[in-house]
Length: 223
Image 1 (cartoon, rainbow, N blue to C red):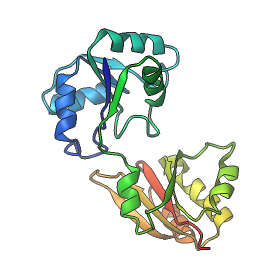
Image 2: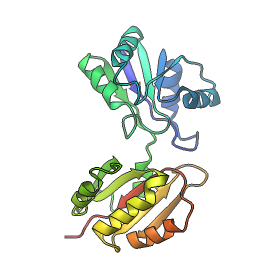
Image 3: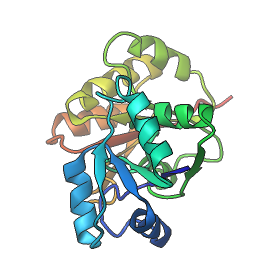
Image 4: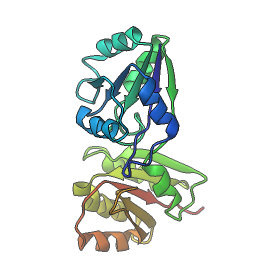
């Protein structure tokens, strides 16, 4: 019994490894965040496999079923809609349960949005703090106040409808001159990275149409 964690493209369909494709071809079952999204990827690479939906809305209630499926099959793959499962996507709970049930787990290296965004930001990346998506309301200010004092570069994911408010809150807490890099649609046609200060970012995104998924990189403080 083995569960493969398989990263999938975050934009360009060529952003998938040869090994990932070989694993998807060889497994008995693919657990996927959205069967329709995964079907497009499989069709592109001419892979025909049985797929089962595994997502944030059923991972708690149907975990026993998923573990039973993995025990029934020799090899199973887990994919999310884009990127590496478990990184701000469903996957952690399944991995934990597999470990508890002595099911072998192997995560393949591959695409994840924050790594290219961090590297191309121009901000220090030898030491960084990755949070994922900011809390919607409760806890956001507390979190930002905590990370405001970090020396490490800080990485967040953010959705388009919350981007501007989050940047404004960051500027309020961290000051207008803190450097920031904001990357959108990594590896997609309209990929773009803004680099500047928080005040410049707020001004820029106040006047721009905000679409896509974003990665925010904040510089750490100098001590």
